[in-house]
Length: 114
Length: 114
Image 1 (cartoon, helix red, strand yellow):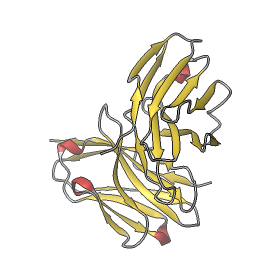
Image 2 (spheres, chains in turn orange, green):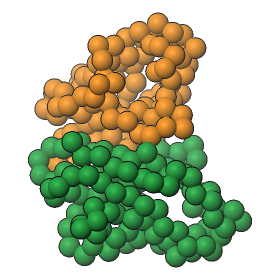
Image 3 (tube, chains in turn brown, green):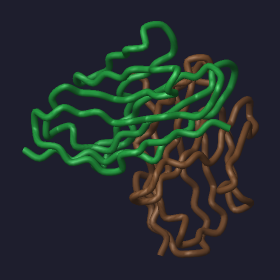
């Protein structure tokens, strides 16, 4: 069964450092998402991406965040200058036909900012 | 914008007890509804989904959910829980038609005691 893969599974970084989280969505999917889950809290929408541009972003997704699909397969989330409160599990998801709505999630990348 | 409410934040049950987790959404139009499960240390997995047709939807591992449009509800049920059902359960909604992002509820932690 096709799956979404994410790397790294866990990254520890110092505050102020840049982090790139990588995702390989399911190959024939069209819509891509990043969600975040701070420990013990709900799953929060960060950003959606379609046709090589951001479709929608939440208020969490400020200027320190960016996404891109550099090579047609990878879908990356960059956090430019990490803060302590960026520590969370970051989930990538992809979605095929929009009418079905089902998201397929990766296993997540745990980011710990010290 | 749509929103999702899960009223039970933490539920503790003994094995073989019956389970019902509440989910209500706010959006007047047509929606697709999902329940996702997150086992300890794992990623989000789809449990079941409703798009149209029979409002009683059966999912994996003996779970089912009933869509009641008049009540804007999509409650999750299982007649007899097992210890292995210990997990966090997230209700999610997406507006039908075209691209729309998925909105998650705050989640319900289920703890099943052997």
